[in-house]
Image (cartoon, rainbow, N blue to C red; front, side, top):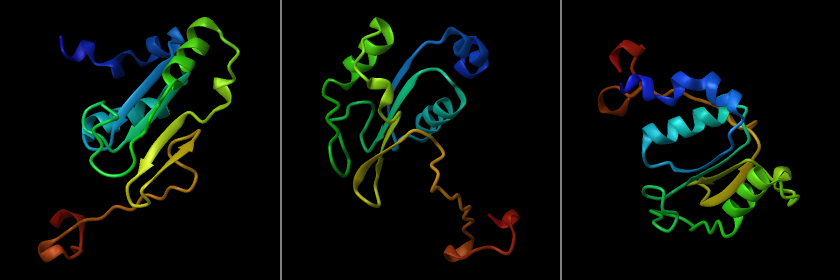
Length: 136
């Protein structure tokens, strides 16, 4: 039962539906952060993703950094997607994310970011880099 309810198993049906997604998620819980970013990258449905430094989905409970006030943004998203309102929402960046190192909010239309580089780090004994990954 759990496997059949996994949204990833219904990727084709979800994408074919054209359903719009407005997703607010957080960096501090790995599984949902990874799922939110993966969904953002994999689905071509209309969507907006906000990734922030808060606990749960409450944007007021920030752990560090600046609080994000979404204001009327969710209403504008659904007015555009559900009512067809001509509010130019589609022209705005689809991804809003908080960078903890820089302590600021940024926007983009894609993930992975054009400037993003991925570096794998394997820590060995005494925080040293092991000779090979089998020691990690």
